[in-house]
Length: 422
Image 1 (cartoon, rainbow, N blue to C red):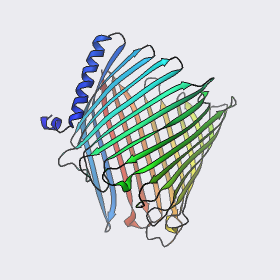
Image 2: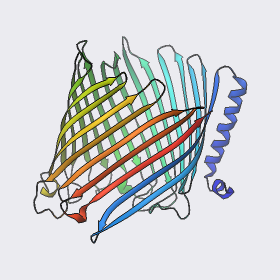
Image 3: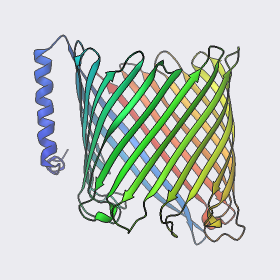
């Protein structure tokens, strides 16, 4: 690799990489019995294809990245104390990526644990890259969490997160920011079949270049699950996100998402589920760009086992988009999901799904959108090969065939890698 690719890495990144390597060597020498070092080498290919229509002609925008990668991980354990360091470097014909991660956990007393996780990511778009809006950036994240048992099977966590993003150039869409939040979470339940989770966080984002994008934030989450020995289960999840912008250039808003599922298992292993989801977007000062919407979707899923760890499932769905302000935004969508999940004890797994459907916009003379047939396909899996090698595949393809041909659109993502661990 040319030396100038390394010299373009930020100074702090090089210093942290050197420090992480030094600590890895120290732990490996000082604690040969408790420390474990693993490595991996990867060769992979990522492809993004965006197809749309201009003046009756199909137009393609593609980005294809062939890359090699090298990763190292060190994990150390001494009783209740755990620590880990990881590094992943990727060099491709489109981008150069570096990721450094560190985590640790200690128990000052038997009922309390202190966890710390941090990461530093750097992305560089090479000269001549096919990314139209490529912009180098560095991102740092840190999470501190203190967990303590509060009696029985309940736990209380106090946590705080920090995120810093620094772009090489300031653009309309890319801007530096600092984000921090903190709050509490409470969990109760001995296992996943009977549990309750509640959390509240208060956050703040500061954008140095323009305070119009700075906001204060409040997040709340409530989740519960209850299952009986007869195979009946109910699960509910609801989350609210409040963002208050400090300047009137953008309206403050609420984003509330909810999911509910009720399932019943049968003696032959089949599971039947009623599923529903909702997303409400409500602005304090709605306008032509930011306006209130409410998305609703319901489905009935039937999942049938094929053999141990494998199953087939089908789910008819019905969705609506509600919008009081603009009739152009309102639609109904009918689709059917057909999928398969295949797993084995040797590490092989495969997930396939296909969802055909039709979206019908309420307004017949709609200048913004047109009705279309959709076909959502996805496949992902992992195949273990000899000598510690694994083949990983991820593919999605979402074509839309519109009543107005000029609105036809499709997005295709392909990611394939061959990873050797040693």
